Amino acid sequence: MRWIARLEITFSIGFVLGCLGALAMLVQAAGMAFAGTAGGIGVTLNVPGALPAGMLAEGAAYVGSGAEVVVRPVDPSPAIAGLYLLDTLPGVVTGLLAVGILIRVLRQARSGDRALFSAGTAGHLSRLGWVLIAGSIAAALLGWLAKTLLSSMLLAESFMFQPLPGGLIGVVAGAAALGIAEIVRRGLALLQEVEATI
Image 1 (cartoon, rainbow, N blue to C red):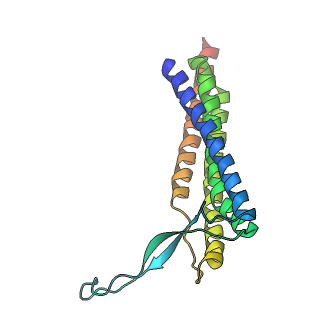
Image 2 (image 1 turned 60 degrees about the vertical axis):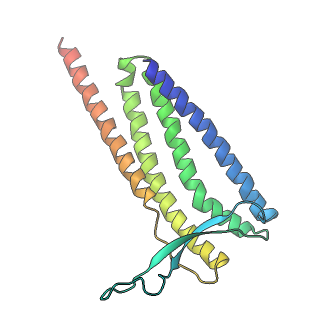
Image 3 (image 1 turned 90 degrees about the horizontal axis):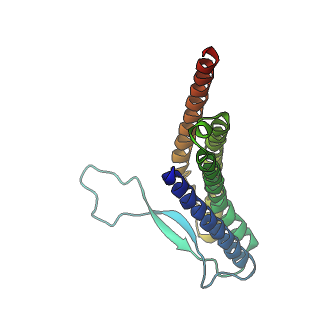
């Protein structure tokens, strides 16, 4: 059980650092809104890029490529700061909620195997799954919207952005957590049936 305690401590430290990072993000956004960011934070955007002449083989056609650029708004802009938070904060909140739930599962698991394989653990894992699924989808969609609006404000030309593929990873992890929760529930039900027959 020592490794579970160490894992809980590791996740707890990560949770505290994540909260501090979120707080720093809010402070940066406030600076972006009211003071400008001439020497501070920038907004990362992906823009279409062009291939250099002569890079295409015969019979090949240019479809498009992209480049990542960091745009630093110099003048104060509450709208840009709000869109920056809309792009970054949902993913951070989803991650913090997920880590918080994992800490609760590990804390419960330290009490013993019976506490680990319980209805409480199954409930925590179900919540973890739904937080990851809903949070990842929301973060991807809100990030897409924010980046599209930011591009129209910070670039000379507006671009449509694709939702981040990281959202798919969160959805898969959430589905896995729901599956594990169901396994724990069914195992618990079987254990209760066995105990009832003894």
